[in-house]
Image (cartoon, rainbow, N blue to C red; front, side):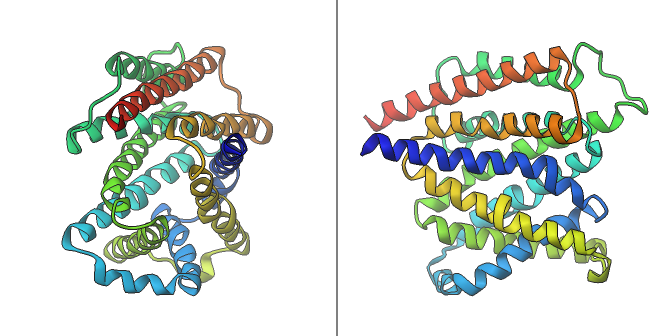
Length: 310
């Protein structure tokens, strides 16, 4: 039965990861006609509004929140919800359906940032040979972005370089949210954390839009945009997150990390099939090396966690 649970959990995580790959290549880029902050606001406001019909009792949990809980929930929403999503959406828009797989693959640097921040903030130990593998990952990320060409900015690759920078900012932000999230999940369940993360992010993005006068009339949102937003909400957004955490109940973190490689791999596949984008041989090799380093870092980190538990 235990093996069946592991297989079941792995399948759900892989499905969620494939949905994220589909979102990064097929869905979110189709919202390019809308301002990036407004897109991020809608991507959180719509699911949060729908959650209120189901999880409205979660508001009672606010009485249990202490000051530090509110602070960390705010940091999760700020980095994981606002800054992270703003950055990755901006990166996807910048490449304009070209080299989307580069953007998604670079975002997989997230575990490295999470482990570094966990060491600095939570005082956790890093896994064996972390510096070596992290250095290899950074070098692989460089060749994934530039290939064998020296980095230079011109009309042809300016957006790709900027997109790569935004992808790395997104990886750092999501990694930060993971670390801050460790403070929350010790006291509250996933349902509460997810509900208030979406709620806090909606409030933050509304504040950003009000401050920058970034709201646009809803009539400017096309029918196609609304369809894409609703599809994201029920599939690659809240839907995929639900599948991911359901699967995570049955598998360990190091298994999940390997299953999550379906995210960048499926993104690269969809990018080639749908957008006819082609990575150079050097970029494919760099992508493969990057995936290997992430697996090694995660497995080594898991050894530290298991050792501390023992």
